[in-house]
Image (cartoon, rainbow, N blue to C red; front, side):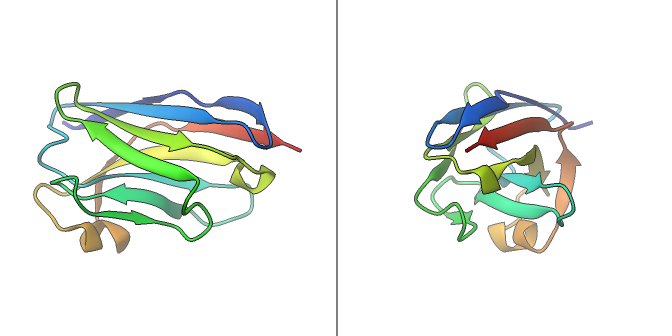
Length: 126
């Protein structure tokens, strides 16, 4: 059973940075596309950053492009989301997600997720 455990959320002022981490057990980050989603109060869940299996292809939401960076360390079975120049609109619950085994990034963009983490709260104040 795939399990994901996020950490690194918190409260920060606008312009600050946070780094989220997600440790996966029950599978390997080297075999699945991985990603981060977020849900703000009153809004739908949004794909923030996705990383393909090989790590050479990625997707970013327009609202975070140039400020967020997704990466992974297969040796640690961990995925990261570096968030810089945070703005209040980034306030949300952030969820780590694992795509289906060996699937292309496009499938994950269309909602094909095999496992979700429990979420970590990010709050950005102005």
